[in-house]
Image (tube, rainbow, N blue to C red; front, side):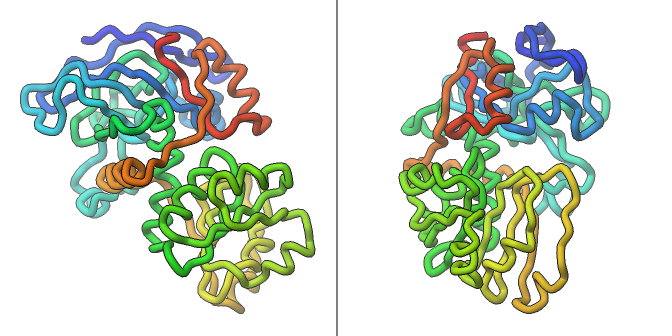
Length: 347
């Protein structure tokens, strides 16, 4: 086994603290890379507090992982020692179901293996994430990173990036489309960058007028304060797509009114409670409300290559791992522009 160290929650009620554990030995198709940086996702906090249930403890969070390859298995063909490498939200899947066969491992019908708080395909071995110094992953779930981009700012692309890129590509958002991005946080700021790079006319919808300057700096063409009834009324039937990144409770009906005929409201945020959806918010304009998660491995690599081509990374704040609990508190208050990333050299 490979000795590893990281930060773990021993129970759902204890804070993250240093913990030593073991990674599996390098298999013939495995890649081991030492972790340089790991992004902090809001879901990390949900998971360590077991707010979504089914938590496996001790739990080492983190699924926006980047670093450098230090060892490869004897049959590995995609990586060599010294390569930059990354791993996102998945480390395996059944590989046999229709979804996996189509490169949609994120929708594996037999259950994919998440990077942490999950079980390997053997159904017994827990996975541990990127708040740690090293990781071993099958080469099919390891991603190539560009050395032309800031490595720390690349880390959040592996969750926040692909979560927003995937639906924009699926619905073929681009030139000639009017895209609204609802919420300007870790996901929303990436949605703006991708929407602009894909050629769409991008508007940010936000409750906070103070975010307008940031939105325009990120490339947004327009900004609407959603609490301003006059602005919202003027924007009625305006957009082809709304990319909804908000994970707090909000009224979908209010935003569906902003869509054109055949418009699509795409949910990538996950509010904690059910929402009332009126049929007449959809029927008059043949509108749709849909959901999307991360992309498959092929699409995630495509996204990373797109980012390298267009010089796109996340806007980050680099932190010491010893400050993780304080960072969670700030994240809950929205006090981050726009993603925390842990410098694992501080472990």
